[in-house]
Amino acid sequence: MILNSLIAALGIALGLPLLHSQSLNTPPSAVDFGMIGLAVSQTLRLGIIAFPPTPVFPPSPICLAQIGFANSSGGAVGPSKLVSLGPGQGDFLDLNGGSLPLGIGQRTEVRPVVTVLEPPAGGASACLANAEIRDTFSGFSLVVARGITAFPPDPIFGLQGVAWGQVLRLNVVAFPPSPCVAQLSFVDRSGNQAGPAPKFVNLSPGQADHLDVAGNTLVAQLGQRADLRPVIAVVFGSAASQCAATAEAYDSFTGRTWTWVTPGPSQ
Image (tube, rainbow, N blue to C red; front, side, top):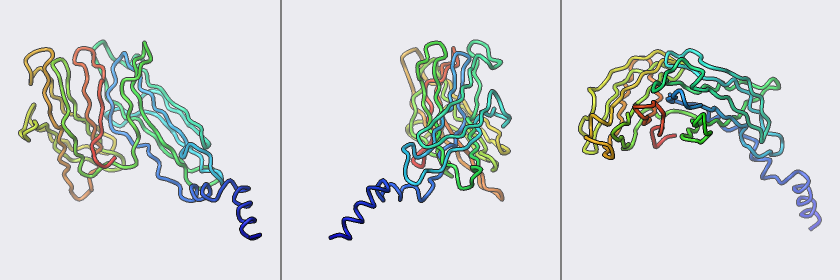
């Protein structure tokens, strides 16, 4: 009886043994992204927090990372930032479309980049990131994309709608340090090829490409829409391809991104 009381008291003093067990294994950081489109009137925000967000005992590893953005050639674009976050802390970095060489109706594809670093005291960083597209003028959120730990080797998308006045874009990037060799295409709900001819891509690490289908080539007037499935067939050669695919619908008049998805079911 006395022994049980001592064990219970010790558990309370330490903040409960269950909390201790949560910090024994550092979770993999969910910080990987594919390409995301951005118009001149939109802002892309890359947010990051230390994971887990609730402090546990003993103290969780910090999130130490360099955050920024890369263009379709793999080069850095816009601002970058070094963040050092403790449990419960977060930070963000903005890329304003108005700061880029874009005109009205134009857009660019960028990739949020999070490079997780080892803390000076050793151990592993644990970070969780998300990207958000918002209207620069109103601040309204339009699209939220969460970071993932890995990309599925065989990306599979569901059906996506595209209306007259919209463009459905299939993006692919060779996620560093791997290349990406693949064929991009679209099929209709019956599984038949639809839209433009398939496109073959052979990308070096960090490079990106895309395939577009315009809604006005599929439907006759405003208010109508078609449902297509983006398809990426990854070719595996001597060097394993790592193709990070995303699909998005954007306004063909303003270039503004309205929807953005990653393939499933592995996310």
